Length: 400
Image 1 (cartoon, helix red, strand yellow):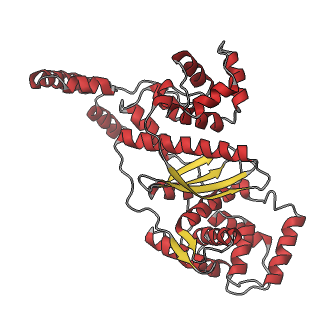
Image 2 (image 1 turned 90 degrees about the horizontal axis):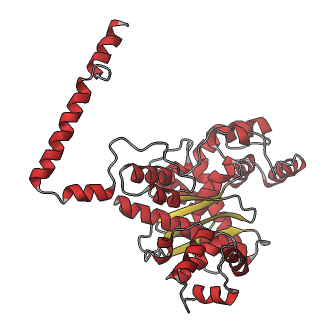
Image 3 (image 1 turned 90 degrees about the vertical axis):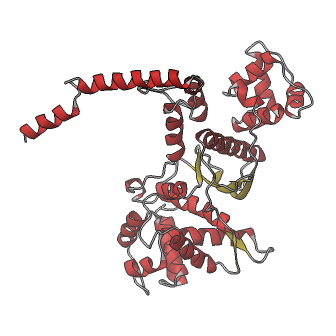
């Protein structure tokens, strides 16, 4: 309903009711917080001018507020700092819901169906079993035991929506799925080191795949299981033993840096892997972390900026450009899906969906005439010596 979508957009932008009222006044629209609250609770509805003002302030189209394509999602494993206020939590959730809804809408426009390979949660009794589940998933996804070049690309290839939230200090990540299709999504914050983004995303995948058998298990145990799962996916057990051995009395920072650059996870995460697999002792693990703290590695590790991994989710961006190029959406739609979108040029031969519909509505004879004219034009271009490919090939052959 209109009110629900006004509230969601307002929260996603981090505005209070008073903030929205103040900005509307700047557009010569005077409304009290109570009136706006009535809109959001669907006790009353804004008129056209008021809705235009709200849309302008919330950077949305008028159509957004009257859309009936509400997407329900189930959230899993929301991770935040204890100091994060509830209003910030609601802002982040609203932003994520908006982004998921965009992806669902665009898939519908492109005619894409939900993937079959979606997570089925598996119950585990111990944190160690998270390791076994990670090994099973690697095999199921056909990843072998080699380094993962891009966590984002793997997830997108497996049908996940991968989202990034603008750098938010109180938020780390979230997992969930679209209720109607069970299509999963994973979220990480931006503005952090690549190694943290990678383990953040797989940590959220862990929440989607794992559930503790004991329903009374602490949240801390669930978090540890998800982290163990993520680290196991990034740095499989057999590769740990091959790279660093089965038993060590000590390791050097240089060794950890080599592994970090190869597998794309932090030295701290590697240290945890070594402890969990009993390659190093608990006492040596403590010494390592004392050293990390003394060097301020807990805030920023060396080598993070040199990591050669691409973790920007690109599938959605590609879909927006494809939908625009094929005439399924307008440039305004593309801007709504992807703020900052700018078409550098109109694609050659681009037909808007309305034009396609017009052509399809013509008689068979009229369509044949159009196709014949198009074929004739193409032949003329092909015969043009300036663009004749065969001629170009001959020129290249003569000069090689």
